[in-house]
Length: 420
View 1 (cartoon, one colour):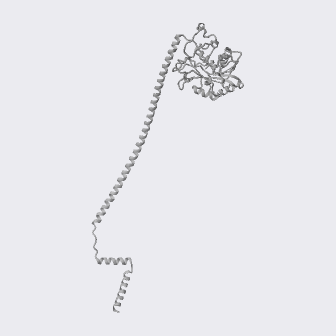
View 2 (cartoon, rainbow, N blue to C red; view 1 turned 180 degrees about the vertical axis):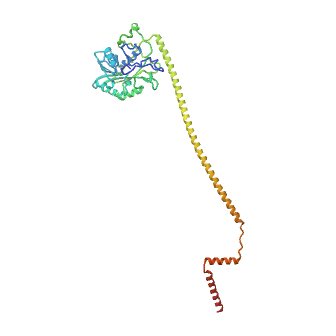
C-alpha cells in the first residue's frame, strides 16, 4: 500500500466497488508528483496509528517503509528509540532520506526477502510490516525472518489489504499484488509462522461529525507545500458509537494482526479523519445509497449470470444427451439391419430345405404308389423245387449227393429190420 513494491487502494470507499476499479496508487508520495488526497493521507496514517502506543522507547524495524513518513512518526513524534526503515525501491529510500531523515532513523534499500542480511538475530523490540505480504510470491520465509529478528519479548504488527472487497471479480486483482487474501487466509498464513496473535483490528472508513477548530478549517492547511504535514496532525477526542451495520472482515479495507506483550490500553480505537462540508457529507450519503443500489444491481446481475450459466449447462447436458441418444439410435439401426439380413438368410435357407423336403416327400409318395400297385406272384411248386435244387447246388456243391446217399442208407436199414 505505502511501500515501494506495493500499491494503495485508498480510493473513495463508497465508490470503490464500481464495475471497473480505479488504477491503484503504488505508494503515498511527498515529492509533489501527485496532488494531495486527504483520503489517501488518512488511510496510510491510520495504519501507522496502530503502533503509536506500542513504539515508545523501542528499537523498531519498519519493513517496506516507503518514503519514510511512518518511520519519522514512530521516532520524532511517538517516541521510538530508533527505527530501521527498509524498502526495495531506490526512489522511495532516496525520498525518505531527503524528506524524513532523522538522527534516530537509518534507511536501507533492500528487498524484504533479504532483510535478515542487514541485521543480527534478535535485534528489534518491534517489527512493523504494513501492506507487504500481498506483494510477495511466498511470504512465509519473510515471516520466519521477522520472527528471528525479533527479541524474545518483542512485538510484531502486520497488516494486509482486503483486496477481495476492492477487486470482487474472480480474475480481478491489483496489478502490483501477487495474490488476494481473505481475513481467514491472512490469519492462517501469519499464525502458521508467528503463532497465535494477541489481537486483530479491522481498518474501515468512518462517517459522522467532528468539531473542527476554526483556525484549522482552511485549505491552506492541506500541506501541499509541506511534505511533513501528515506528521503534524493534532490529536482529537472521538466517541466511537455503535455502528448501524456490522463491521465484518469482508467489508473492511484492511486487516491488522498484533503479536507480543501488548496491553489492551495500548490498542485504542485510533483513527485518522478529515473534515467535510455538509454538501460533501450529503454527497457521501448519496454515494452510499448509490453504492447500495449498485450492489443490489450487481447481485441481480450475478444471479442472472448464474442462471444463464445454469441454463447453458442444462443446454449442454441436453445436447450431450441428445448426441448420446442419437448414437444409441444409430447403433440400434445397424443392429436391426444385421438382424434383418440374418433373418432373410435364414428364410432363404428354410425355403431351400422345404423345397428339398417337398421333393423327397414327392419321391416317397411316388415310390409308395408304385409299391401299392405291385401284386404278389404265384410260383408253381415244380419251379420252386427246381429253383431250390439249383440254389442248393450252387450254394453247397455235393450236398444233394450226400443227402441221396444218406437216404439210400436209411432205406436199406429200414428194409433190413423189416425182413429180419
